[in-house]
Image (tube, rainbow, N blue to C red; front, side):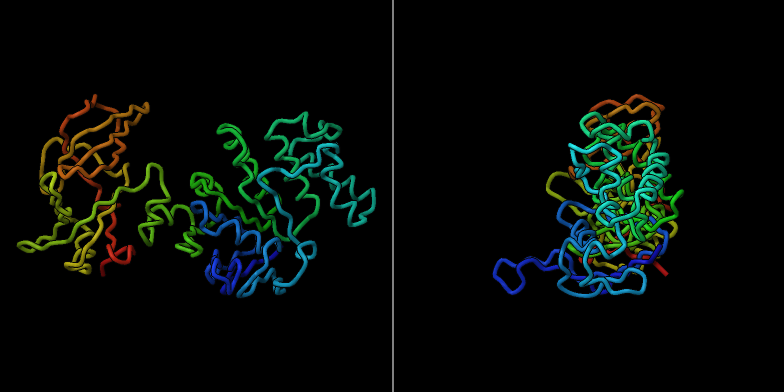
Length: 376
């Protein structure tokens, strides 16, 4: 297998024209040999365009792409040592599963015995052995996706590319297929690059995750590192479900203690929260510049009484989820946020509650740059 190296990789549509659009903005990334790398981000962030440049389906307008030690900018797709699995399966409806999986090998004039060996091996890995004489219309969506994966496996590529391959499947089948693809990666020990807009897929499948926005890379990290230590507000808000809550305001010092003061509004009195632990040093570093306090829903707990380290909020909606309850709340200023709490008590709409934050897991962001603020 091989590493994939992107150096200042750039994609501009209609360059030099009035309607030109820069979809990928000079990104740098090294995808390691045998790594499962996931590109994730909202629609239009440039993740699929980046994948298509790696595949050779989009022309590179700037920078270089290397697979192994070879620069691939002008190499034909068929000669790049890659295989791609598409969102819509791209199977030939008039061919059997065997012929669909063998088609690329036949074009390359692979010997018949080798074709049969490779197809049989891939079919066994994917549980398709008993279906090889069927045509795609006789298969479920999940089975068709397995055939598309099998067609990639038989080519024995250096790099596998997946472009949102599970988006056409129902929720239960998506869970099953992402498990199968992860198991396949472990079995083949191959370099795989996977594009998705689903952050749950990204978190559960990737060795590392590349989060993109507006053609830029926002952060590349291991899943839990990305979740626990986001470098900016975009990553913090995109990774996690429900997403991180953000409260704009500023840091203040009073009598040697440091506090976060929510931005006031005309609708009500803003809350003030006393900082503890690492948040104190972050507040010192931020000074009086506008800041954003971030806390994940699961790091909020219902407190028995109001204190300097709690805030008061009003329940707007309570959603029992079994062992947990999602509380949709409003601060006195009317700012909405979500808490994920243990379902030990019954909650009522309009009820006033006091909430404490696990400040070991909260974050402070600079409001202007949206980057995380870390103390000394």
